[in-house]
Length: 193
Image (tube, rainbow, N blue to C red):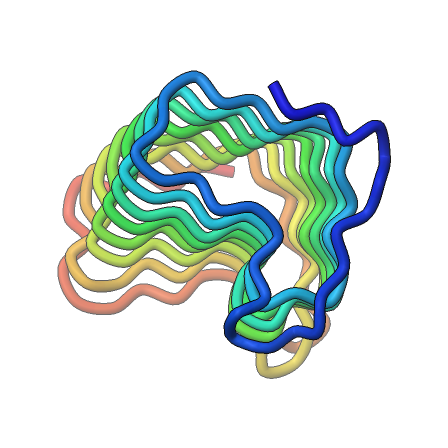
């Protein structure tokens, strides 16, 4: 357990500027840390049973949380603002992203690529190029999220054969942006107000 007690990790934003790097690990908990002006706030690879809770990320060049080949992770009560991606997951499964805030991200609030069996619920998204992006991801659940979308932005974007996803009870409002973008094959996906 790494409890930062609201201390700050601050960098230059350059490519070698990573707040915390986790690789080949199990049962890691990160609590109450502020990540400022980094290339990646938290980078996780080849790990399982990860908890990130009550942390703040701002002015992050690539991603507040960047994870590849992870499973059984919970991202809860985090706030990510002014990042490339708020949270970017590749080859991930059984993740929960909940009660978090993603604002002013230039690429996406949350992205899942080649991932499955994960849940995105009760989050707040505002002024992100893409609020939620799924590419080649299956059996995902998106529910009870609030998305604020503006001109030139998209609320939820499904592409690359993202199939069998459940999208329901989300509150999406638009001031000129697209609520939902769908590309290629997305069979079996259920959309519900």
